[in-house]
Picture 1 (cartoon, rainbow, N blue to C red):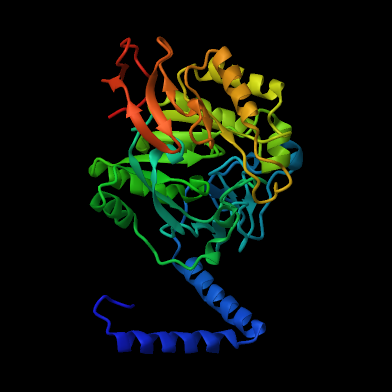
Picture 2 (cartoon, helix red, strand yellow; picture 1 turned 90 degrees about the vertical axis):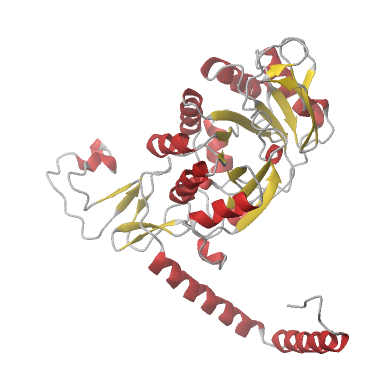
Length: 410
């Protein structure tokens, strides 16, 4: 490391040494470099396999009193009195994919593996991305506006969204990133020492590191640090129940309002996401919903009307709903960015259905970024891009007419 006290001569000598090392490495044949990289990855993979903790939320063929219908349909087991599996097979109960995992194999998220009949989490304590972001970037608009969030992610995701903006980590395997183990207390202490009041589990799908985030959130509460989840909502009920007990806010991506869209674009299903949204809404955890509006895929009047009708009828008009602009990424490079007029149409539909807090996202400077009082229609929270620039609230109420604004403000 070059320090401020480094002399000019030492600086030049160090530069020559680094240049020589770079030239030496650059002269290696590509095959040798690939061999070295594969060897390092293989060694790290062995470390993961050895030291990764046993995960939660699973059953196996060796689970006592396990019901065969947990993995098989009634038609599959009809007429069979008893069947002894020759290998230890696991069913993961964490998310709605319900992966059946054979020995040495992984679930669709790539983050959980069957080793000797036990499901292990390969991402516990292995964050691959850590940043400090504005809370508005998540986006949370009605949760501690203007706050910073200590944000972290691991590799892995149970979905395969063709438009994923974080596909480099969400679609990766844990061994693709050789990172040191970071215990939960280190995350909490880092956030606390930097005076960051919120820890955000984000970027990839945090459900894959549920055990890690729950342990972090429990420790964070002791230091009065809030914890929030940015999720696709594809988890099962029991894990979500436990997450709601330790989290302060959850943002769920409602990617579209049709099963066909979910199957074709995200390799998932809509119903589990709707179930999760309703479950969070019934808990005490603050909820916000995001709909990434993708041209030609989920931007029809019917889909937007159906989505807004469902939100109003099932979770109520006070849940903030964000209609976010799509930008070409990952496997959808052929589509253009969402026209602003489409986002305005989506927001107008939402407000016409009675949704009180409808926003336009990823369009800096647009009036639809701000929060308006449902009663007097004046701006109570003004935003520019991802930053809050003005707050006209007093004790959670509009300063102009005293109407209560839904959210978490202190």
